[in-house]
Image (cartoon, rainbow, N blue to C red):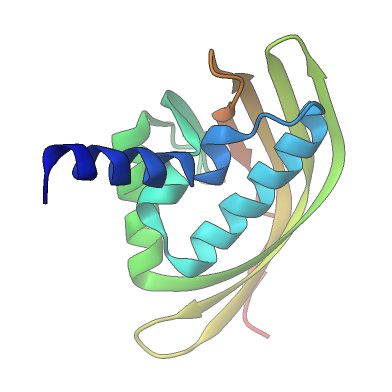
Length: 155
């Protein structure tokens, strides 16, 4: 394969990542699209795509109180989750606001996790907060993400 063809395919693949090219005129729509893409990528185990929805220096704060900083650490955490479970996640956004180059989305989630080793399921719910920053190209990326857990259990 020629270098030019390789470069063209790489650029086309990069442009196809929904979170990276959310340049709608309404930031609220872009955030909703990003939120939906995040859940779909998690379910479909698209590790590289989900990681690209985060800014390079993003921070993820899971319910256990840890602070996961940077794409590589977020990738590792996400990979462990994807290797262990399949997630069926539903978001219910309560508030989405933006001002300038910053936006946030806050709401509730419900999730069913299916264990890959034994097929067992557990259900969880809680609240989330995602903070987004508009990039120089007009796209939005996650810069902070917080999850709380209200209930986790088996059916």
